[in-house]
Amino acid sequence: MDAEKTCFVPRGPLLARGVSRLLASHGMVTVEELVPSRGLRVDVMALGTKGEIWVVECKSSRTDFLSDHKWQGYLNWCDRFFWAVDTDFPTELLPDETGLIIADPYGGEILRMGPEHKLVPARRKQLVQKFAITAARRLHSLRDPDMQLACS
Amino acid sequence: MDAEKTCFVPRGPLLARGVSRLLASHGMVTVEELVPSRGLRVDVMALGTKGEIWVVECKSSRTDFLSDHKWQGYLNWCDRFFWAVDTDFPTELLPDETGLIIADPYGGEILRMGPEHKLVPARRKQLVQKFAITAARRLHSLRDPDMQLACS
Image 1 (spheres, rainbow over the protein chains, first blue to last red):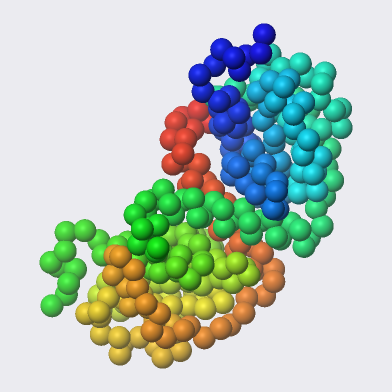
Image 2 (cartoon, rainbow over the protein chains, first blue to last red):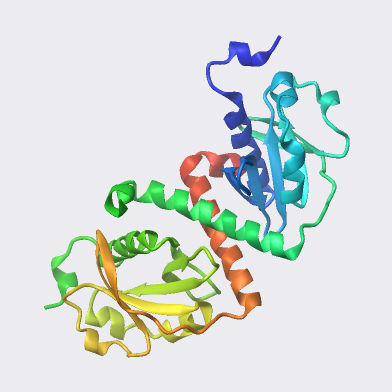
């Protein structure tokens, strides 16, 4: 049974929450729904203290995975790539050469480390800056919600 | 009269709010109370789309300015340095070779551009990363306030 049919809230963002908690416990910071390049939007981008960048795509079901035709494009925007799925997901569908996180809304565990393909310095620089701008802009909107009005 | 004595809320953070709105209108993102290095804490650090970094120190009164013995240390952590003060501040106290923003809690105006002293690439890289980590960690705390408990 596709678990999405019995669930009233989208499960992708809940998996992303658990993934972010997991990665925070590994000393990384995360931003959800980050756009590394026009037309691409990654579920979770994580940044480590040494500038390492991981991308995690959260898949709530087989259908969700099979309908994703963009994921290989994400490999060029991270040092390591992971899938995050829940315990019901048929993990045999997932390519071996990718990382695997089993998650729920409250946390998760890294079952298989994504192989490392180091970003070139120029792209890492571009990504860290994009990450900084995205995080700071969202933080600003939350801490000063009247700002949009004031700046418009 | 020292305006601080008649005010029930700290004015520095309110100036910082106005400064952040101003800089957002210039296309920059900001983080308040950022620690670039142990023992230093800048009121507002701003990051531009080309990676340029500005520091803005908010001074609510003459006393507040005169008691700041650290500001020259901030010059090594930005491309441009600014003071932000309100309209009552005696601006003749401020060194000519620094930038000047007149602000209130709702916005501000750049009266004098801080002269540019470009950061070396290694320090810029370090600062953009620190900026990213600080912003993302605070954003995470706000969007998932139960996280601390979950990760502890």
